[in-house]
Amino acid sequence: MVDHSAVWFLPPDDSLHGPAIDRLIHWIGWITIATVLLVHGLLAIAMVRFRLGNESASRHVRVNVKLEWVWTIIPAAILLSLAVASEHVWGQYRASSFNADPKAATILVIGQQYKWDIIYPGPDGKLGRYLVFPKLTDVAWPHRPEDHSHVFHGVPGPASLPSAEAQRAIDDFIAQPDPGFQLGKDFSDPDGADDDFQNSIGRTLILPSGRPVKIILMSRDVIHDFTLPNFRTQLYAVPGLVGTLSITPTHSGACGELICGQLCGIGHALMHADVQVISADEYHDRFEVAH
Image (tube, rainbow, N blue to C red; front, side, top):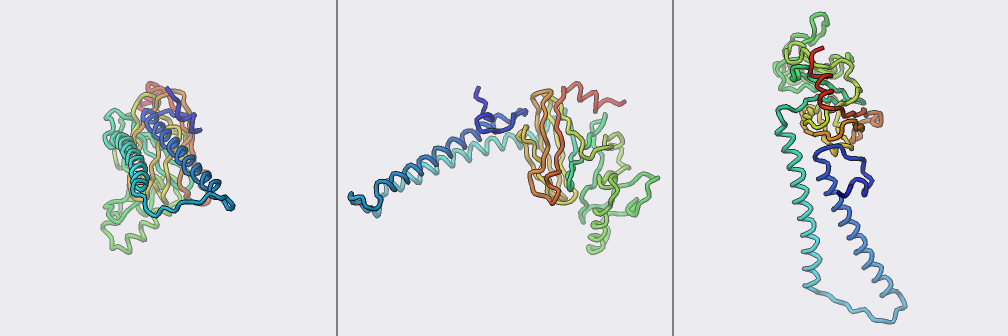
């Protein structure tokens, strides 16, 4: 079996869907090289053959229908084939994300300048409510612990306020410096009672080998690009929207890096986290068993 990633200097692939993407990159690369060589070869021939001082007279052809058909049909067929192949690979990948396995491990990832917050759902397998980037349609703010007084505690959300006042409240919400509040965690949601959200900022993203992983992606401030090169995975984190993607790591012990592929500010280069793949049993014992 050909290792396409080695041919094109890609990082090693540790995902179930990665080989299909690598094959597509492989064919696009070779087609591009062949096209460049053909075009520049013809250009070189023309430059030599019809250079200044060459006595052989050129023949001016104003219309050549057959040639026009050739250079129209062949590129169109190649591009159409690549489009169909790309859509097939992309469709399979997105289908796995939209129809995630019920037994998939769920992880919440929140992007903010300039770090990734990584939250695991705990033994119940359910994530609580996180209002990371409020919108005018939100009916309630997240509740805080009783001993954590805050201006937003227990008050209606922006949907109950006039538009201008709601926007000011949203701006104040986003500007809060408290790390716990930045996560937007609703402490009144019972599903989130056992969420592993402590020390979530910049922690290692841990994935189980051989088990589907559903990643829920959000952004607190600007557009970030959740990119896992070693898992051939990329999705934009857009403020106010919730994205989902699914991957299945294949090699226990594999390591990689989570980076932001979108220029998100002056500290963009700092926005990365380590990725580690462990066995499914070890993942279960660490995150899905009450301790």
